[in-house]
Image 1 (cartoon, rainbow, N blue to C red):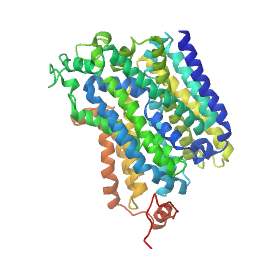
Image 2 (cartoon, rainbow, N blue to C red):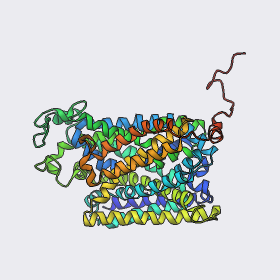
Image 3 (cartoon, helix red, strand yellow):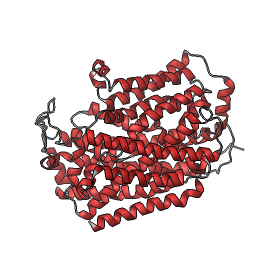
Length: 524
């Protein structure tokens, strides 16, 4: 217990210390929100990765999808690395950095407002972000209760309050730069932690080959459906349900292209070299952390005797109980590492979300609309106040959900990724690449995804096709649909003003001098 407490105190001390150290970089809006657009490749890549993967992935998704799909759940981690990290950096990284700086936009709603010449579009985007990020923020505390209860026997409310206060201190003090540096440290912990946990868990089963052999002997005897009683299905290449597994891959991978807290990382990139280096680092980070989490979860059914199985074939205590059950037999020192790993994953994502929410609320809703005159100092002050408010709200919601077993909050969190990414992905992507995207097309994408995802948690859900009843599949559908809706609607609606579009895309035409190692140049 002494070792666990000492490790936690050191961890918390470093986080707060970095926040206080970075105060000098958070004196104006650009410094507080984007780190002065001078964040290097390692910090940017780790900030992207740690914001991507939280305790929701490690405890919730890894346990749930590992139990459902077996070792095939690893495909979700591979998708996160290739589609959610590698291609996201290649397709969005450079163009996002160039155009957002040219348009002088610090948030995604501000980008929409300036790119499409619409204040109402900016306000609508900020409202959507506020509605769907708050419950997502509250969900980050999930998973901590079981792990802390197992390791320290501490009340869940105490865990939530301590995590909220410490995260608030370093984000409020140091802004984006403090978040990025802490994300780097937390990312290192996540990398080493997941590797150590996988080695220990597989070691308890006799090693990888022995564990895989045992998993191949597990049959789905207590579950309904075509795989009931089929031995080897959980050790197979695509698992028992490849169609729904594909929905998981699309939602958790393609979703990052439209999530404001993820895309905003590209705003702060320092240089061309940072993009190239960051692409490699971010991809490797995702492959290890996300691939490792889902790979670990794939062996969850080997611990059925520990977690218990209901008559319906689900774990006793829900899917969140799977990973803690797998970790319950670890040595104390490794259990302390796991707790810090989950804390790191949760705090890094929490800091990113509240910084995104506060900057969006201040710059896109309050500034110029509710408060007409706001200088730089006042904007930063209001953002700091809103960070405290958002963290407090998320902590209260998390405690209420835990105490009263309110499921609505958890359901709304489940659709937040689908609603946000479905609404923003296509307008943002086409806004960077295509001159023909129109304001009405953006509105259509916003309305379609938010309405569909909200309907998915209402009685209207009963009228959905069976494949879209799952919020996972429904969210993936909204993302794909947006990529079709925006170009189709743009072809039949009023074209954007030529001057507006020419100005936005002029930033790509500026000439720069590069070395011949990067470009051959014109023949003499």
